[in-house]
Each structure stands twice: as C-alpha cells, then as structure tokens.
Length: 452
Ligand code: UDP
Image (cartoon, rainbow, N blue to C red; front, side, top):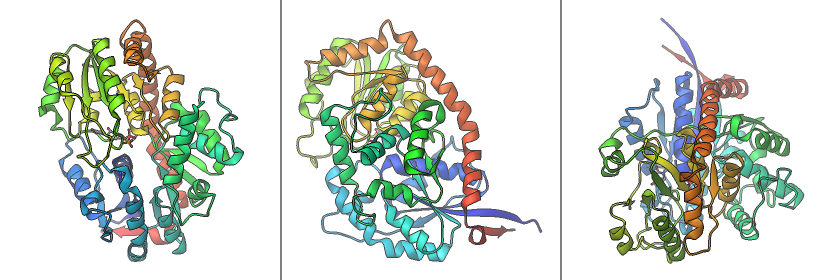
C-alpha cells in the first residue's frame, strides 16, 4: 500500500476575470507539485472554471482540483448572472462586495469542514483571511496586481505623498492620482481596520505575500513593497491562461492568419473598462491615420453603463480592408501569440501588460484609472512601449502607433523579447519557490492527508 502525503490548500479568489484565472493557474501549478487544491467560488463562476479545466487542451496538470461552491445571497440590486467572471459593470461592485461579506459565515463553515493547512486569499476579500486566522489556519495573500503599483500606493499611504516615491519613472498626473485614490476607496472593505485598509490586507497575510510578477521586470519595486509592508514577497511568475485550443477556428484568427507578420495592432481595454464616445472617436481617427491593420475589441456593456460608446458603423465599413471589430470576448492569449500581431494597444491592466511581455508584443499604452497609469509608466521605463498623448484629434494615437510600428520597431521588439526570455527562465523556478514557502508556513497538522 503506497502512501503519499499531500498538502491541502484552499484558494478563494475575487470573482473578476483578472483574479479567478491567475488563481486557477496557480492552483494548477500547486496541484502539479502535489498539493491538494480546493478552489472556492460562486456556483456560476465555478461553471466557467469547470469549462476551462475540461476544455483546455493546452493544460498539463495532473491532480484534479476540487471545486467548492460558495453560494451568494440574492440581493435586490444584484442580478444573479453577475456572479460571473466577465464584464462586471463597476456600479455593481458594492453590491457584489456586500453579497460576499454576507456569505462570510458560510465560508467559515467551509473552512471548518475542509480544515485546509492554508488559505490563499484575495486582497478584495480580507474578511476571508480573518475567518481563516480565527480557526488557526494561516492565511496567505495572493496579489494579482503588480508590485510597482502596490508599492506606489503603499508609499502614498505611509508618506502621504505621491511625489516622493523613490523611483522617478513612476510619476502620475493629477487626475491619475485622484483616480488611484478613488480606486482605493472603492475597494475599501469594512472588515479591515479603518484608515489602514490597504496595509491591513497585507498585514493579515502570514509572513509572505504571493504576487503575480517576476523579478526581471519589477525587482526594485518588489523589494520596496516588501520593506513597506514587512512581508517577504514571493513572485509566482506570469500565470498566463492559455486559450482553450479551439481559438484557431474563430473568424478573427482566420483573418489574422491572412495578414503579414507583425503587421497588426491588437486593441483591448480589458474586461471592465468602457471608453467614452470622445475616446472612441479619437482612437478611431488615430487608427485610420496610422494605416496599420487592427483587431479592436470593443464591447459595449449592453446599455448598462450610461455614456458608453460603440465603434461608429461607418468607420467599420470604411476600414473593412484594414481591421476587424470584435464585440464579444476576444481570445486575447491566442491573438497576442499570433505572428501577425506587432503591437498591443492596452489600458495596461496588470494581466494585459504581463501577457504582452509573455508573448513578446510591444505596448501602446492608453491607461485610464487605478493601477493602469503606473503599469503604463513601467512598460515605458522598460523600453517595451510608448504611451499615447491623448486629448487630440487622433494625432497622438497615430504618433504612438507609428513609433511602435515604425523605425523604432526593432528596438521595441528586441527589448520586449529580452524581457520575455527573462520571464520564461524565472518562471521555471517560480513555482518551486512558492511551494517551498507555502510548505514552510502551512499548518502541517491539518494539511496533510494520507493518499492511498
Ligand atoms: N481578456 C480576454 N478577452 C477579452 C478581454 C480580456 O481574454 O476580450 C483577458 C485578458 O487576456 C486578461 C484579462 O482578461 O487576462 C484582463 O485583465 P487585465 O488585468 O488586463 O484587465 P482588467 O480586465 O482587470 O481591467
């Protein structure tokens, strides 16, 4: 009779796409290293996780991940289908946060029932860390945001100043500072000590913090953040979700297959941003002026968000030869990995920037809010992209595209290629370090189970 000791860990992500999928990739990495992983989310959310686990032909993880349902209470201001990962309209965020907090007792029951040796929690759900600690289960924060933006935010919290941040590459405009504070306010969660919520989230974490990053890109920011929050930062690597392998059959991929190598700009502003009418027009004009091929992911949130815009039809008609507009969910990983793509116009969400490096695609940055401006400056500092000067008549957009697709093209491609290599090398060892740290911290008495 052969026995095998496995560490049991419960993972509990916030339900947005940019959180669930990095958590899931980390879960796969851990299960490959013989962890027994419980993955907790809402039933609807787990359906998409299940699909991804079942359909993904690119996956090579061995040990099944056990899915654990946490039903959310029904609230009058929260339509049930918003328990899913895609397109969470920002105005529903407070109701979602509330629903999750109301489910805290059910979560405590799950902890008591499963008795994991460790909880990996999300910064949006610090109450879950408290629930674990109350049962003697060590909580470990997993941040799906980058180190530079968190260091910048923590610095402001400590020193009450943005401008004394010790790294010159990261300077924000006034409206960006305000937007960053607003983003912080919007995730303020009542359970955490008042006025200290962002530190609170880190301080709840037991000894270490896992962060979706890698040293080759962010080392100095990682070190600084570590000193500010007094926790060891352990990078997990990029944790890219690869498409499900069926992507190649999609219309947009066929279209891409007929373009020349490096000729096409991929445009997407993430899963939660909707651009205004003026911004839409500015980008459309800039695109037309630039003359590059493009794929533009332009979802409009089905009338949910007042002021959201749609790509003008006459523009689409006129540009039929040059580009396609995708109105649904785009297979971003497959697109960025395609040889015809030569640039990525992005809002600089952390996952998008990470994916750009992973696939070696230079960045045309159009940051809007929250951590996006910091991530954009980071990309510029690394020499892998340019930022669009906005507010003009499309000329700033065209100029930025021209820099990435024009004479400087080789330089951008070389630098992003070098960064990509570093990322891949580090990635191979990242999971070993994560496993070593988690094993050290884990509550061994509870976590080990005997396998036959
Ligand atoms: N994404 C995608 N298709 C889309 C839009 C987004 O696959 O049409 C994925 C993208 O690859 C990335 C994530 O959704 O992994 C977006 O995360 P990011 O941090 O860039 O932005 P957020 O949506 O959190 O603002």
